[in-house]
Length: 240
Image 1 (spheres, rainbow, N blue to C red):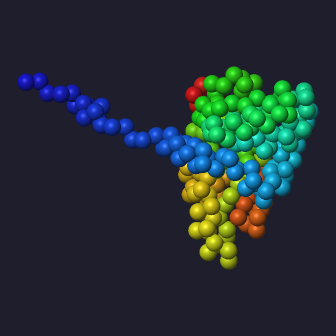
Image 2: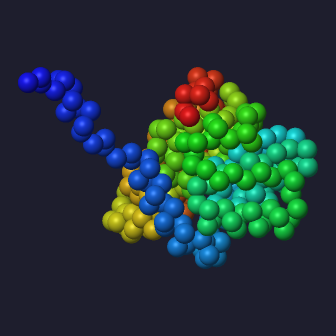
Image 3: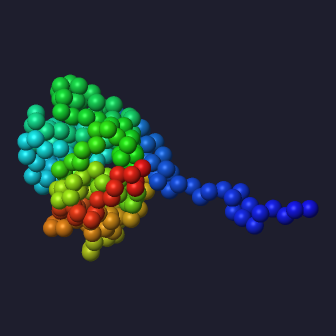
């Protein structure tokens, strides 16, 4: 009787779950529940959003990518900065959130704004991003920042030297650290991977130069910016 190939057990073993897929599944489910009331909850972070957009120093005619655009709250600011000759591309994997962004664009009549429904990992295949962008806005996009695959795919959409602004939530330090369980619970309500809040920017920062960082919200948030290093972008086909 012939024996099975030595590697048969290896081939029959179940593959480990795709962590990114699990995170995205949790995130989509959470935002489906929160989409209807999302805009009403964003009042405290609207000034931070405006500051993040200002850090991009956008000029008329430029192309900017709104990473995880959600309901499109950043779109008016971005569109005003690049003008009618520029382009704003937003993407999100939550159709419940993106439906509101699409309604916002339709109501405003912005022909320069393109919205894409996809995960960050799938950006390379999107025709709207065939030409690389001049700037990237990461506004409260924790899951994308913590996924090497997602982050690489997003950065591949930008030209070397592209301006990057990032804002998000983080743990308190010092005497406010006892409040960090509450911070975790706050993040848990939105993100598929709610942990890793001590330095959630640490996978992005090494890919940028001229990195500037400041805490916000008494230390519970952060706002940072920099310029994309030439070696940070990867070929689009590498992240398909």
